[in-house]
Length: 355
Image 1 (spheres, rainbow, N blue to C red):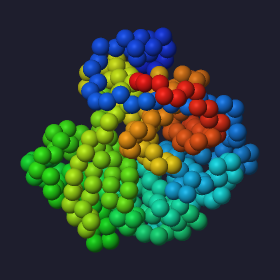
Image 2: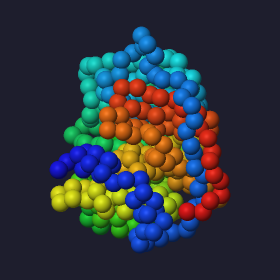
Image 3: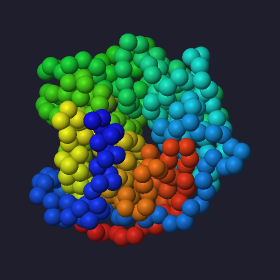
Image 4: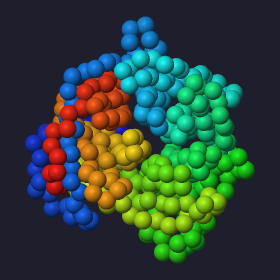
C-alpha cells in the first residue's frame, strides 16, 4: 500500500476519541523540555480564492507567506504561481508552462525571499521571482535531485541536502549558486548521528529545510520521531559552522509518534510532515498527512516562545476535501485545499498551557 493510501485509510478509520487517548495516555517517551502551547481556533470564512471568474487552480502544491507579510503565494500544479493579498484579492500570476526563463514544468517547493518575492524549485532548476513575477535569478540543479531547499546568503544562493551516501567527513548540505554546485564542508567534528548517518534516500524523503536567517537554516526530520536542528553556515557560505538541536513541542511530538506507529505498514515509511517553513518570524511545521492533528504547529526558535498549534479536529478534513497546506497569521489562517484557498479568521483559544 502506498504512503498516501495508508494515510487516507488511517485518517478516517481511527475515531477522534483515540487521538485523545494517545495524546494524554501515551507511553511514548519524548525527550526534551516542555514548551508552552497556544491553540489557534478557526472562526468564520473571510474569503475564498479563486473568486468567480478568477484563475482556475489545477492543484495546490504549497502556500508561502511573503516576507513583508502582505501577500500569500499559491504554488499551483498548473503549473503557475499565483500571488494574492491577505483579503484574497488576486494580484498576479506567473510561471506559465514551458522550459524557458521563468517558465515551469513541475513545481515542487517554494520559499519566500527577503524582498517580498519567491524562490521556486521546479524539477532541476531554481527560479527566483520578484513580487511582480519578473525573473531575478535562475540556478540550475544539474544532475541532482531535491525535494526541499532553503535560501542562504541573502537569497543569492540556496542549499539542498547533500546527494551522496554519508561517510565520516562528507557533506550534509550542497550549495547551489551562480558559481555552480558545491558541497559544504563540515567544520564540526561531532555532527548529530541522525544527520551524519543519513543515506541519500533518507535525506531525499525524510528531510525538510527552511530558512531561519541569511546564514541559518532549519533541518527537520520527516518521520515518526520529531527532531530538528538549527544549522549555521559560515560567512563565506562554504561550510557548516555549527549544528544545534531544536527543542520540539512535546505534545506534537507524542501525537506524531503514536499516529505514525499506527500508520506504519510493511514497506511503508510514515511521512507525517508536509512542509516546514517560516512565516511571521516563526518556524512552522505543517502535518496535513495526519488528519487527527496537529494540522500545523510552530517550533520555538527563541527562548520563552510558545508553540502555536492549529488542531485538525475542527471539521477541516473529510473524505472528499482535505487540507494540503496552511499559513497562519495573527488574525487569519489560509487553508489550501485541492483547487481553492479558504481564508478564515483566527482565534487564540488558550495560552500558557503546558504540553
